[in-house]
Amino acid sequence: MSDTKRLRVGIMGGTFDPIHIGHLILAECAYEQFQLDTVQFLPSGNPPHKTDRTNGASDEERLEMVVLAIRDNPHFSLDAEEMRRGGFTYTCDTLVALRQQHPDTEYYFIIGADSLLSFDTWRKPEVISQNCVLLAAVRDQLSVSAMEPKMEEFRERYGAKIYLLQTPNIDISSTDLRFRRQEGRSLRYYVPDAVLNYIEQKDIYNDIVI
Ligand code: ATP
Ligand code: MG
Image (cartoon, rainbow, N blue to C red; front, side, top):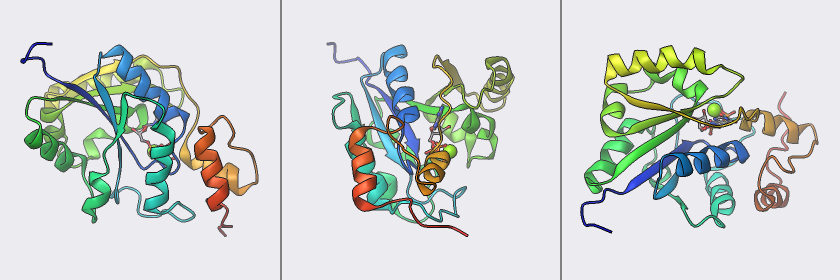
């Protein structure tokens, strides 16, 4: 390997409440399609757009579920920095800090179509765009042709480098999984076995919300 090779690192950010196979498939597809060296899972500390987390897992539990979900994949790792930081956490700040620490690394931030559509409401989208490549995957049956104009808009407005990630539409969300569990339905195969065992053992997502 030459000295000049830049490390290509994927970032899979999320609340992971809980982590599910949608997140894992996205990360693996990004690794494969963009020749990434590794994908770091970045659980958000306190995301400003998710202030109501009734019946959610604790920060420690979300973190532990990520650890359990990725531990058998050698090119996945955990970055717990946003959780350590406390207060509201913003992707732009995290990326700037990462680039300062690792100026020779190329970052690839992985998002689903819902995140793509709301990208211009994120804090400092132009700073995010300067500090990473964005990889966007289909979600919620949203067609690629609906995503493309948005991608083009953000390229023009923010100079974003943004590419489509080829994935199947994976109709799973953490919100749905929390409801399933409240209703006493199985999460088997939606989350890795180790995560399922942990949820059952710790009795997470069982509170009745009225
Ligand atoms: P919640 O329902 O609590 O919002 P979520 O399933 O959307 O949970 P997040 O932690 O919010 O999971 O998602 C982190 C990132 O992963 C976001 O960019 C989101 O778009 C993406 N993502 C999550 N699930 C999927 C999925 N099934 N298909 C494509 N992208 C997904
Ligand atoms: Mg979400």
